[in-house]
Length: 152
Image (spheres, rainbow, N blue to C red):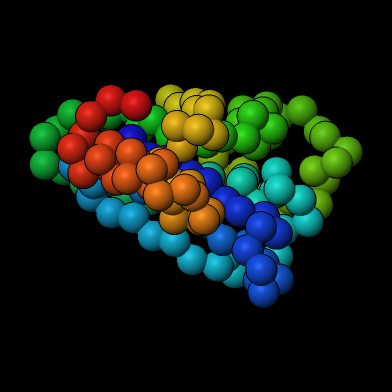
């Protein structure tokens, strides 16, 4: 299970945007960094973050298969419904025609039922603490969820 998020234009001094990803099976890993490309919209920023998350989750799925011989569908949460729509639909969207086709790797994973992307309200998005300056109480709440494996 993973949580993907980005902060497009919210961080002062950044021309590109921040992204954060948390992998949540005992908190296997996390990262927060500036992305390598400049997104033209918040949707593209979220979609780019989804791509990196999907690639890492695919690696984890293969690792689990090697260890257990069980195929597992990975679940990826994002708080951007437009990014979910782009990932899930092959319909041409005039506003997203500039998105590189290699980014549609996510669509293949969804079609093969290796990945499911699900919306998560931004108030419950634990990856927010890595990209945004949240209030202390919200950050503590997120950290408790991350490190205790409690439900959202």
